[in-house]
Length: 93
Image 1 (cartoon, rainbow, N blue to C red):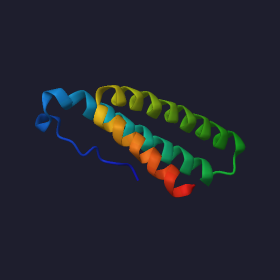
Image 2: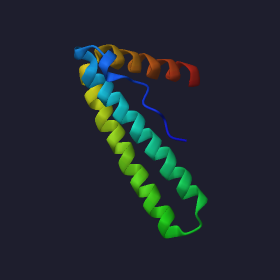
Image 3: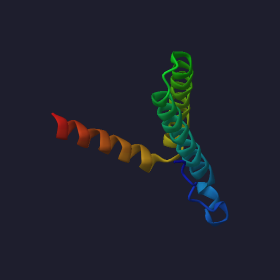
Image 4: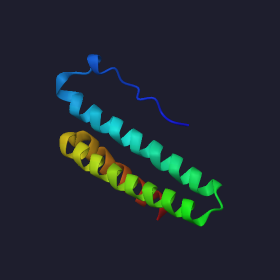
């Protein structure tokens, strides 16, 4: 269910460490979102469901924070993200 962070930081170039740390943070947050939303869907207790969904929402904010920092550090990632958005717009219109 949860991802393994596929990185050995000893093999990462010094100038890429921060980007890889942010990517690992994004992976961890996405795992948390998936876990909390799955657990919420499994319960019939409205309070438990509400709390899990609220926490999942907070994790989505964390993804946005990490992604914002990553896009500031990795201009190629930012460009490719924009290309991806454009491709989706073209395909669904």
